[in-house]
Amino acid sequence: MVMSADPRKGRRIVKGRTRDLQQVPSENMVTLDHAFQIFYSSKKAEGMRERTLEEYVNSWRYFREWLNQYDPEIQFIQQIGAEHLRSYVDYMANKRKYSEVPCRMQTEETLSPYTVAFRLRILRTMFNFLHRENIIGENPISNIKQPRFDHKEKDTLTEEQLEKLLAAPDTSTYAGFRDRTLMMLLADGGFRIHEALRLKAENIDPKTRCVHLPGWMNKNRKPRMVPLSVHVLREVLRLIDENQRYFNSDYIFLSNYGEPLKADHFRKRLKLYAKAAGIPSELVSPHRFRSFFCRQFLMNGGDLFTLQRIVAHASIETTRRYVPMNDEMIRLQHEHFSPISRMGWSRINKRRL
Image (cartoon, rainbow, N blue to C red; front, side):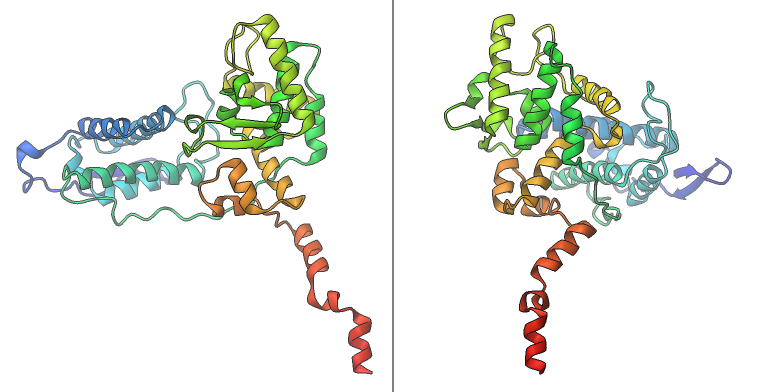
């Protein structure tokens, strides 16, 4: 049986029934974790990135923990039905944020719709694979639709806020100079944080003012070139020169001990800079610099297709989301391109006379 908590009294309620296994030969039964291991090994053999494989592991763990609590009788993958997956989606939609992280305090916020959709998408990938491989006869997720949610326009950093952030680090220290240089690089080239932290001196071409990223460094596995402004290139070269004097490493962004800088460590430092600059912490993250670059590039007259190539979006639709469409921009665009305004009121009035 599938059970979940009654939100009124906290008691478990029956939501469905476990799939009948009498028609499945016993030799074809596959345990839950063995089924996942088959899926995981296949994706690893396909050359999936370690980060993607880790996301598969985490999403499966969350599902298994829920299943152990609400329907512990389930042992085999063939027992999973659509009703289980629908109940799991309902559970995630009402789950308190950080409740599954021991070191974090649970909040009143629920999981974001993006997180729910992401975890369901991974389960969909897995069950589709198991069905194609004939490990399961029926695909329980085939009729489960992705949850719908309202898309909210994310606030991005303003130029004034970016200036305050860049002024926050103490550049008389190595860490402060490194952090400011990294912020400038992210805001000037729209890099993903893991791309920036993998950069080595050999990736920088001072003559063309470009950063060359080989395919293995990019999310879409295609090589790309990212131009840099003169000011940012100068700061990056200064950092490389300082690294060569003190550390034995080819990486550009290093810790005080000469080891490659970790993304989480940089995120924590960004929060400190945000506080010092008086900027809401939710507006400051490595990805917000990427959003800033995309939005400013378009606002300053750049075109969508060039931006797509620079930031390596797989789809132009992803790039299109950064088109500035707030109320003020819409008003200004209308004022500039309105056919009546361009014709001129005096011209219209003259014809009337």
